[in-house]
Image 1 (cartoon, helix red, strand yellow):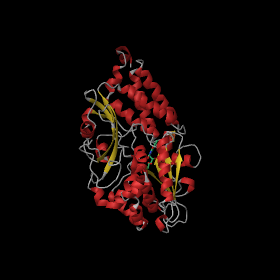
Image 2: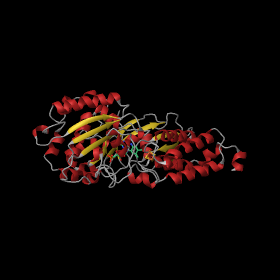
Image 3: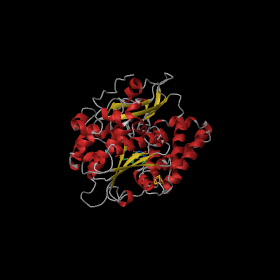
Length: 429
Ligand SMILES: Cc1cc2nc3c(=O)[nH]c(=O)nc-3n(C[C@H](O)[C@H](O)[C@H](O)COP(=O)(O)O)c2cc1C
Ligand code: SF4
């Protein structure tokens, strides 16, 4: 099936061409397509040149925050005599996101190539791929691919006969959302609880095992080989000045064709929902969309023409996040949806910060009360107050992650909250 916005890449940048073709997993078929030539090219480049090419491409981190990848790599110290590490974040726990898993499942060698090139750029001697524990089958595919790459001399000592060596270790987590936060991930990797730490120290100063570390998302690293092969201008032919390139969109919810699509950044969200994904199965209008995974602000039906760029999403008060739109048709109960999201964050809070530990479960209790018809108008004020108290005050942004959807749902769908309160309760306030 071909869709208007799934562009035809001239080479395998991501998974458009490969999704569903099992043989792309094997080293033989990957090599037949020229696999690992980009690693060869990177070995012949200096680490600074690799970083510069990625900087010029404008690639931004696909783990959610959209931080420029080349810039992040340039923060790593040079010639400090310490071991450097690259952590590939394959935890992918954000509700709505299911793109990294597909890369691991169908094109594991693409990820390995990206890891090696990233490691070379930051002077890392070891890459840790931290995979979400539930991705059992996918981890097996990745394991197999890493073993094949070791046997072929593409990973390990003196890679491809060069003087450069780099090891890859796959580490599986135990299924905690907070292990996807970069410092929580490194703590977990080191055998501690997956609790985030307050920065500084930043990972580039003292990360995994106390050494300079860069953490990058699976999709980010899988995008790098194409950039190294074709150059930064090639990548910039798609997207906008501030959001260049293509992006994998994990589309779910009330859609005729949910799934992962590789789409040039910048097309209107409306086109992704209706042209690419076929609109709602019921044929009913869209009521709301959470565009970037459950930690991003709700958009209303009036905002669907926004551009799917980092800046376009900001203009409508939301964010691109992991580009995982959850689409809700007009029959959706927004209070129920929000209660369900809040429950997830309350369950996944690591509990270190009072505002997050207490705030998330307090939000759940209030939303349950409203949902069951026992709410009061003052509960809405309490929810707003909690949003205020939970923003920007915690070790990591998990607390903020529940505030974005909650506050936007109150702002845009207040009438739905009030409709669940009987008129006497509304009057009492
Ligand atoms: C609560 C929380 C959960 C996160 N989960 C993930 C995740 O599952 N995968 C991911 O790549 N990034 C996740 N991140 C973002 C990472 O901390 C980090 O920014 C990212 O891995 C950096 O990679 P990038 O620069 O390539 O995007 C999470 C952040 C927070 C605050
Ligand atoms: S904000 Fe929440 S998840 Fe993050 S460190 Fe604090 S308690 Fe843990």
